Length: 562
Image (cartoon, rainbow, N blue to C red):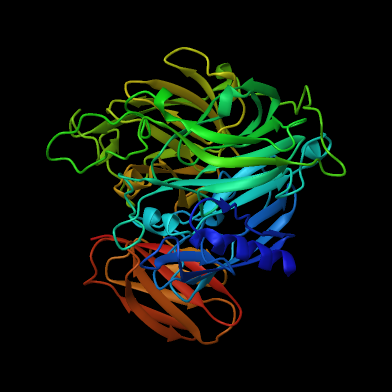
């Protein structure tokens, strides 16, 4: 409790002028997790109090979840934000029903309980909402947190892993506030960099090998991280796992959604100060964060004062060593065998497009299509190994993210990826006029009802419809117009005149809510054994049925098709 109070105090000193001690989110570990997302507020700057979203005791952001590979996890997400939301486990390999995409809506005042086995390798992941058209608003207000997965291979290495001491989580966001100190979801004129919700932060680090877990949780900005005086560091992990061996570097570029783990050697530097910086002056035009592009007169402003300049992200004050310091960087890490191009079963082409080459703020498309919840873009056979060719035909770079799987980058414009981009990834930044090929395997989970997403991780682009969806199908998968799940049957599906719902277990009072794809409640009632709902006057589209009683709770998708 004392540690938690100290962390909360560190967070509140943001109201003091000058630099502020970095806030470190507390941790939750084990196999059962209870997360309550709620509305809150925080005094970031003098004047108006900023309206925020927090999780559990946090007024902004969420606790760090620590999972172990192979554990069976149960998470209850309670929604108290006054709006519909979801919760996506970014980078985790889970079934579609547990993924937390736009179809897994959590109504205000209700809960969602995904359960899954942790299959991912040790690395840094994160969680955030994925509500259609509201992801930016909810995530930027603070509904986001880090996930750390540990496994036996990582535990066998001599690495820093004392959380907040020599293993430091860094959730980095570039945000825009309006004149009333409220978050602006688009963030195109962002001027404030928050680290773990702290403005102008500093951290104490021991004079030894220190591990830094970098997560770019910004809505749109790409960072080009490095340390003062071009100090070298070692990259040991990217999005989805440890590399085979450390890669020495002086820069690492992370676009929204990407993560990396760095080791920096601070041995012999007791009493010194260095800065973690973004060398944005080295980014090319077209990457959001690089030099500001010339804008047409009709476009909204995108001239952030941070664009194209070098700036400090985090001050590191080096102090004494700990009692058991790590003083050497391993020469090897973990074996990893990339998928072979020769084993690919299919290839797919995704072109990122806009209405014209002059468009800088969207909308942007995949293959000239905006997201449509009624359209399945790809049906992928279970166990397929596929090559996806990603081409950016716009003037803006796009961080491309695929749910469910990790992938390996085969090449950029025909050239091999840089060493820091090798290994398991789930986000790749595709620059203007660039073609990137990635290879992935779609295994373990098949579901013809609930899709996975792929999308641009610039949140404004995603919310505007730069997203597609796919289902993974097994040979045994067929089509049925009856949904059977958790003791309820719902039929027909698709429906035209009426929907019938039957409790197939035991008659008891069941609460029912039906919402449309925007999260609006259009039907609310209760029944015992069965009920029939007339739908002949409902608009064609996708709807979500929430059913809850004392024994069970489930959410199902139905389609009204005229």
